[in-house]
Image 1 (cartoon, rainbow, N blue to C red):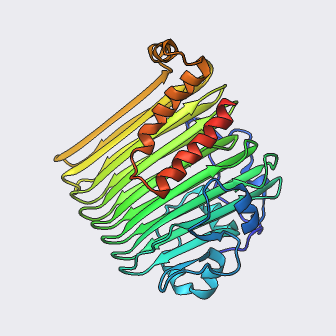
Image 2 (image 1 turned 30 degrees about the vertical axis):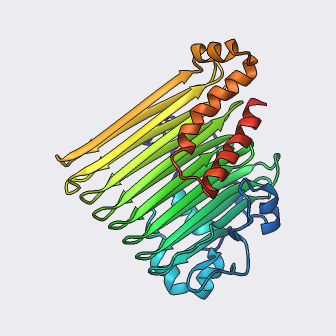
Image 3 (image 1 turned 120 degrees about the horizontal axis):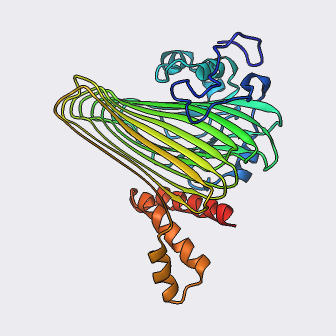
Length: 397
């Protein structure tokens, strides 16, 4: 692995609409390699910008030099420190989940920030683990990497935030996330992108779930001027399950693009994906989802949906579900919808004496509540509801 800032010949990035996966978000004149790599901000800076409360969690910022205190067994520390202290573990797992791509190649060579979470066999981490990375230096790229490994029977919950130091720092973030969920292990991963709206974000995120493993993956996309995120799950053993929940709220001229894949590579696997978005101003979002069922993955049960609510007449959403099925004993369904606020709902609420703005807010909150209710009552449900409320306040003004 090369040191950050070295001059390398990287694979070319797509810059035209004909490139597979980039039809709706061509990079055009954006020169990714013009942004010099730079390290991210401190834990104190991350705490000042965080959406999620740190109280009651095991907290580590991507650039921390010392490991966080944990119970006996688990490791929670910066990726750089992990590479020094646990080279065998890092060599075994880093790069084993994510696929090669031009974006991953750049991250491999240039990452400065990142976090490593390792939970040994049959160990349960009681407190949520709170990770963060902060883009701090204007005109630079932050290359950050998250590697989470749960061995057989392990359990953990990880909240992972991607932030800007302030509302004016311009730059690029190239993030890679690898999630490895062992046999009969359970991971809840909450990834939040809350960069400022002068930033670009490119993300490559992938999970592999072993037999009888359970992944609950939550992704919140709020910030960035332009963003493209690949989010993939591979169900790699009998009885594996993945639930994926995504939410975004955009305004002004934001452009966010989510490309999801639910790959069923083993029999009797299940997946459930739900994305919902709120769009205002001239913003645009793209969700393209694929359910892929391999030949040997009989008795697959998979579902995906994308629903979008347009608040402004010039906002635009694309929702493109897809199926690629090679097995013959499966149940796979999908749904997609794009609509404006229902006039009858507004009329009903206004007829009860509510002002127009209040009525609109209630309809929007009800639309997003369906996502919040996918989670049991507790800290993560409250954190997600709070994050959505804060973002709605920013979007609606």
